[in-house]
Image 1 (cartoon, one colour):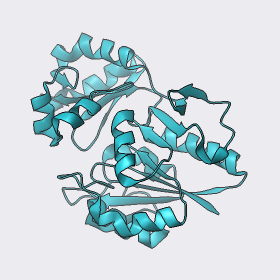
Image 2 (cartoon, one colour):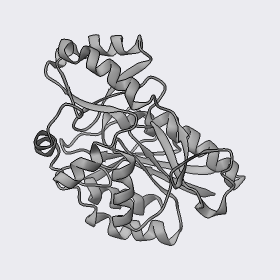
Image 3 (tube, rainbow, N blue to C red):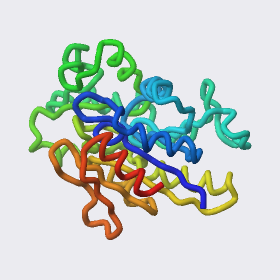
Length: 264
C-alpha cells in the first residue's frame, strides 16, 4: 500500500524555538529513499514552504495557511492534473476564502476585540514573536488566505468565534497565533481531499500518516489512518482522545525523526 505523510512544520518537523530540522535527518533520508510524498501541512505561506522545500531538498505537494489550499508541482510524477486549476508553476485545489475577504472582517472588528494581526504588525514585532529574520518575515507576510493574530484579551475569544461564523469565517489557535480563515477550511478537510485525489491518481487505497503538535493539527490527525502527536514545547500532546493516537517521547524534529522511523 502506498503512503502519504502529512506533517505540520513549527514544533513538529521544525523545532519550536530555532526552526531547525537537523535532527530529522535519518527519517528524512528514509522517506526520500522510499519515495513517499512528504506533504508539508502548515499555517505558513506558499512562499515560506517553497523556500523550506529547497532547503530540505524535496519537490512535493504541500498544504498552506491551515488547510487553505493544496499546491502540486505541475509536472508531478507525470500525473494527469488537467482538472485542477493552474497557479504560477503549480496546480491548486483551493478550500479557503481569499485574503481580501478575511481582512475585511479583521479590519471591521480588530479594535473591538483587541486583535493585532500580521497586516498591522511591524516587522520587528513579528520577529520578536516568532524569531524569524527580516527576510523570513517578508515571506510570512505573503498571505493569500488567512490572517494570523494575537488577542489582547483572550476572554473575548468565544464571542469572536461566534461572530466569525456569521461571516462564513472561523478562528483557530496554533502554536503562536490565532488564525482567522474561511469557515470551510482546516487541515483535516485539505488532508481528506488530498488523500482522495491521490487514491484516484494511484488507483489504489493509501496509508495516510499525519504528525502534529498543536490544536490546529487536530482535524488533520482525526482524518488519517496513522495519527501521531509530537510532544509540544510545553511537554503536552494534542489528540489524546483518539483511540489509535501515537505519541513521541521527544519534541520537534527529534520527535518527528523518532516517529517516522517507527512507522515507515
